Image 1: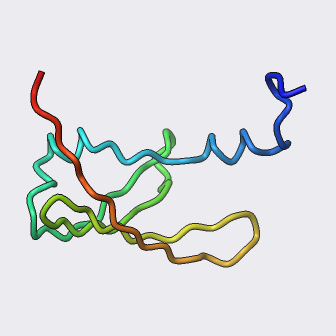
Image 2: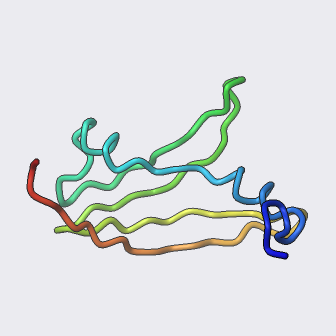
Amino acid sequence: MGGYGSGRSGFKGLTARKIALDIRTLKRKDRLAPGQNFSWSWKLSDGQDAGNINIITGNDILNLSYRYKYGEEEWQPLEMSVKLIGRPPV
């Protein structure tokens, strides 16, 4: 009970499709300064669009706006704010 692979079927497939938004990449591309409004997109290995997100930067916060779709359902909008918490350099 509770061993590897004992979870709900299909769960791995759902998490495997998640797309990451890497804060380190945004920082390297100078996209974390307050007051920016831009779109960020991802491509599949074959060049097709995998998704995109609109990002508005504030002081220590990212406002994210995107749409998602699960199966045959209609596209659903989702907006969220993410607080950025820094840590001192090592």
